[in-house]
Length: 201
Image (cartoon, rainbow, N blue to C red; front, side, top):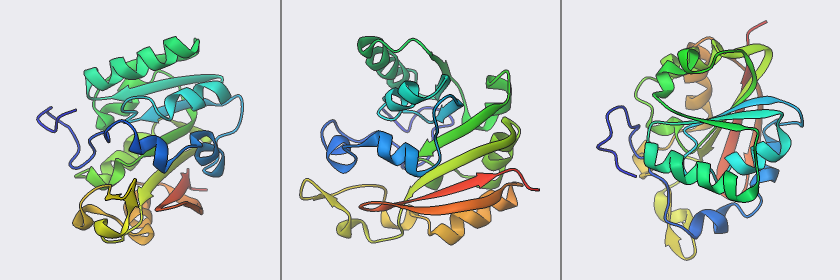
């Protein structure tokens, strides 16, 4: 809602209603492409208004939705209640403190459109690694490093400022500096990629 919230990551505000759906009309497809499979225990990190949380809940055994913005978290909670999803818990908290927010190891941590705004990305990767089980995965979905005017949705430029965008190589370097290991890099059309990390061997 507002970057005035202490700890709020730069340039990670939720989009206006409408174009999110136009950009990703099939959020479940994005989740499957980045490695979510049925029956997992999942964290939707920086979940925003829950656009991905609901399809996660429909596939996962259990999902923990985490965001620092309590207002957005309430919108997500209402979205899932209205859809009849009962396997989700909602936690307002700082992503850096993930290990203290999640009480047991999880199979999958999903983070869409937020990693670019994290000031200390290796620190966040370490926090995620501390919450993953031995075979756990961390899926980061980022905007490609293209000029913002070239990533249009509903005929308007969308997404973070050009200078905030990360190449796949930058994302990989930051996550691996935090102790994780790249397992897969996938395209997430039309403007994103998914970098999926696991624990080092």
